[in-house]
Image (tube, rainbow, N blue to C red; front, top):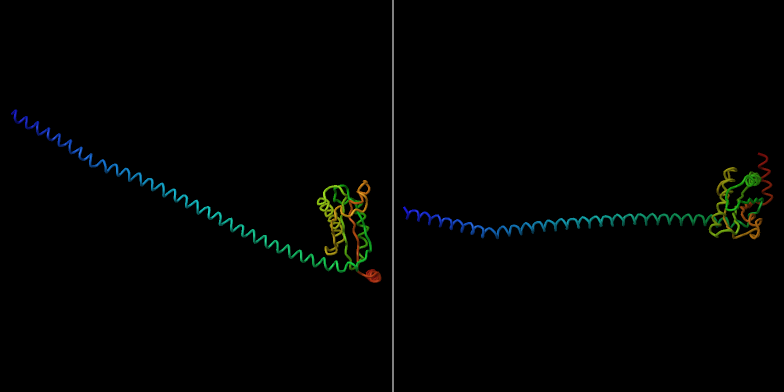
Length: 240
């Protein structure tokens, strides 16, 4: 019995040693595999992040390229519009130049029939009632006039900058033209207006009275008909 017990104990001890050895062997064999698997997972995760980063950069690059393309297209449209506007302005300038040339060539044939001058308050471009009364007296002469033009010249005193006075004198001339055109049904082609600012004073700017005279608009009624033709036109008009 004792011998049998010893045999059993030895067998158990051997089995225990064998079992531990098997576990250690498995552990030793599988540990590198686990470590390798972990490394693969880390590499997979890194590759995934790299792919995502590359995709984001690609999308950003595409967006920037699209934005640049849109900006280039808009610039091209703006350039085309600017070119068209410039061409239109050039055509208008040629038309005005041709029209002015035709008028200038015939100016020597125009003679003054009547004129009127209205004055404005300081830095004003609004007609007073007295101005309108004077323009109405002048406008009454237009119904019998034939083949005429109205030369409208705006001026200012010497106060202020040259450019401001050019603009102000033009506004004053515009106010007179608008009044006569609307009240007496005068077509636009009859008017030739210019704002000369403070360039041509009609009185000294050293006095208040002189500056008042310079804040003016002068309108001249000019015709290229001979006096005899004017008389015939007036007679023919009165007989109708």
